[in-house]
Image 1 (cartoon, rainbow, N blue to C red):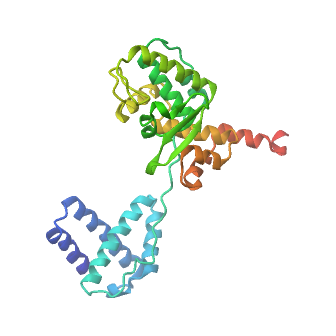
Image 2: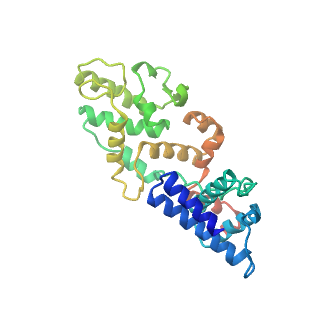
Image 3: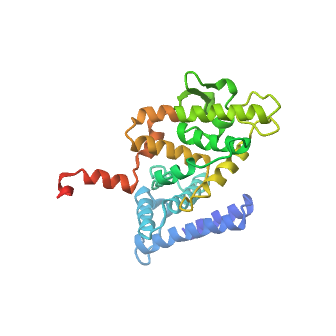
Length: 300
């Protein structure tokens, strides 16, 4: 087994010209697998035939790695190294079957989305502004629109003047794969939109079809929007991530925690399936306590 591993490493180093770092990673992974075979599988003094490696042995090794508290990502990386090794052995006619074809690595746990707590979002939105300052008015409207509609950064940047229907109080956005959807908005956002349009008309001389513009009349870019959001969210020290998507996450979380149907939230977000929306079904610890306090035994 060690001989074949050495041949494979030489193949990576001299024929594939892999970097020293990559070659060392493959070498370490294969060395760990060989050590596992010698300790757990092979009887003392036995010559191990590489053909004996099957899916069960690989799964045993995977379980051994997980017992060592390796993350799913690390285990999957080692399985990838082993997979490449056996592909090489098959191509060289050293083995006939690939033992990893029936092996699936551990699933990575999905990180919960970052969202802003209700108290912090209130402090963020309820700020005093210079009503005549174009950039202040525009920037605050961006924050409010992200939170009240759940749109993506690219969708906000792409809004045209004709996409805002003040009479029907509907916002038309173009999402992924050019799919368009209509999002309703409330009176508060309507008032902010009207005020922004008035201030923009006084401050910006160049006529532009884009809704959100700079002082010179050019459309805002995604980079500018990211900077504005990050700057505004920097006032929340407990927030680990600061981006427009955090406001989108907060919109979805707030809607679901307040009893909105998942299918409705999914439509508002422009998700193609409910699976994408289900990640927001987590609740904060405070919400969890409220649920438990409704239990009859909790009241005693």
